[in-house]
Figure (cartoon, rainbow over the protein chains, first blue to last red):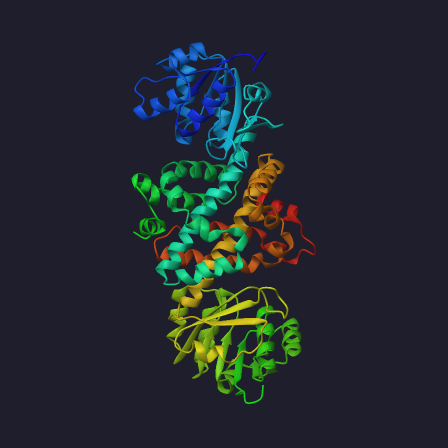
Length: 280
Length: 280
C-alpha cells in the first residue's frame, strides 16, 4: 500500500454489504467514517469490526469526507442523498444502490461530482470463486475505482454515463430475483393443484441445468432477504415501465417477496414455510 | 403389433403437433380420422402424410370414433369440445391442450368419459434425446395411454384426477415460456438503457448454467411461436389467480408474446427483430 493516497470516505450505512465494503476500503489504507448516532447496536458492532470511525452525524461526515458511498435499501437511497446534500457535501457522491437509472440521474443533480454504482453478488469475501462486482459509471468512475485494491471485490468502471451501472443491476437482478420468485410461486401453484411432486420431477428432468428445484428450495436465503428484495423489484418494474416494456414480471415478484417478508425473523425456514406464506 | 386392439380415434386438429401424434397412433395400428371440410391445404397435406382418414365433418367423426383427441390452441379447446359434444359423441374425450385445470374440469362435464392431457415438448420425433411427454390424468388415463406404442412419445398416466395433467403443464410452461419472455424483455430494457453488452456479459459470467443469453437469442423459435404462446400464458396466469398467487409474471409474458406475434411470417428473424418489436 506504499505510495497509495489516503482518502476520507463517508459510508452510509454499515449494513451487511456496507460494513464489508467499508472494511475493504480501510484495508486499502483509507479512513472510513460513518454516522453512528441513533443507529442500532448491531450496526455499531459491524462498523467497529470493519474498522470504521464513528463521526456521529451526517453533517460531520459530509464535512470530513472527500467521497461519500451510499449503500442502503433502494427505498432509502433518495433520502440518504438528500441528507448528505443538505449537509453541504461538496465531494464525490457514489450511489451504489439497486435503484432505477432515473433515480441515479435524479440523485446526480444534487452533487457537483456523482458516480453511479451497483453491486452484483453478496458481501465480498476473500476466496469466493466469483468475486462480487462493484460496477461504476459516470465521469468519476475511474477515480472511485482507484480507491479499491482488494481481490475480494472486482471493481469495474463502465464506459457509460450515470445510469449505466444502475441499469446493469436492473438487468441482472431482474433475472435472478425475478426467476427465484417465479419458481417459488409456480411451486406454490403446483402444490395447490396437487401436482407438486410431478412438477418438480418434470423440472428436474427437462431443465437440469436450470437448477430450478434447488433455487425454489433455497428457502433460507429467500426468507431472510425477501423484505428487502421487494423494494428492489419495484425499482426494476419501474425501469421496465420507463421503456413501455411489461412491468408485470417484477411487480409479481415484488408481491411474492412481500408475502415472504414476515419470514425475516423465522429461525430456520424451509420451503414449506415459504409455500405456506404464499398460499395463505 | 399382433394382438393389439384397433381403435378408431378422432383427431381434432392435425396441426404440427396433432398430425405427428396422429401419425404415431396410425403407426400403432389404429384408424385415425379427422374432419377435413373447410380446412386449409397445409392441414390436409399434414393429415395425408400422417395417414389420417378424412371423414369430412365433426358429426361423422363423433359418430365413428371411440376416442376423440383434442390438440389445438388453448383458446379453441372449449369450442372444439362443444362441437364434439353437440355431435353426440359418447366415447372417451381427451383434451391434451395447454388449458387451465378449471377448463379441463369444465370440458369433462360435457362427456361421459373424459381424460385430461397435456404435452410437454415439441412434436415427437424418433431419436430425440428427451422424448416428448404426453401426460394423462383422470379415471380413463390408463386406457388412453395403452393406445400408444412408439418410443418417440412417452405417455405417462398420472395418479391424479382430471386437472392434474393440465396443472403439470401450467407449472412447466409457466417456467419455460415465462422465463424466455422475461429474458428477452430484460434484454430489450438493457438495450434501451445502453447496457446490452454489459448485461449479456454479466449473464454469461454469473449464470453460465442458465444459458440465458442463448435463450434470449433463440429468436427464430420465439418469433415463429409467439402468436400461440400468448394464449397459453393467459391460461397460466388464470391458474395462478385461481390460487390468489401473483398472475403478473404470465400476463407480462403474454404481453411480450403478443408484441412478437407479427413476426410469425418473418422469413428469418433474429434477435434484433424481437427487440425492435418489443421496443416499438
